[in-house]
Image (cartoon, rainbow, N blue to C red; front, side, top):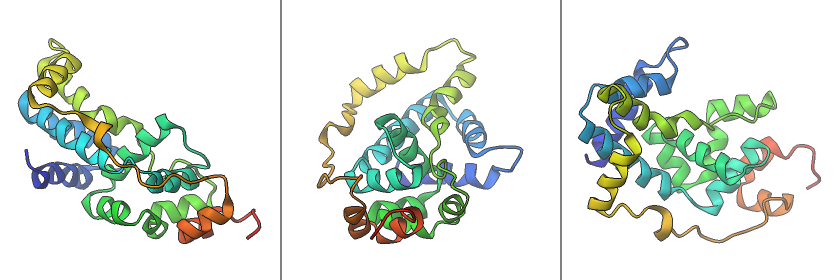
Length: 190
């Protein structure tokens, strides 16, 4: 599965999503219509996209949007970036501060909602689809480990996170992420 096909799955799920069918359910449906091999290939691309935004500047954006951000929450944020679709994912990857223009981020800032972009369930969509396709007869994680070992899917060990900086320093956050800081650092001097 190439990157274009990966994003076509994400976009198909985004198009199928409704208030009664959240994105992740539509994604599981989309993946469940595919083979086990396709689901494993999807997971490989998902991990590549997920790992590509494992960076300090993206984490800082998550920290502002989420009112803090643990390493587990940062996994959910990166999954949420993928769920936003290719356009927003690529914008955020190029410039995390551009998330200040996303309607959900703007709305969340105004409502003091720290859930915008974070989407834990997207991390598990491939496993849920695999379970559905196999009727629960095969374990996704066993199949994934075998697939990953055969393909050398090494993950984030090779990711360059960029320059680390203090997320609790409002001046530093304003300097690095001025638009997000303008939305989220309203009660700090600067």
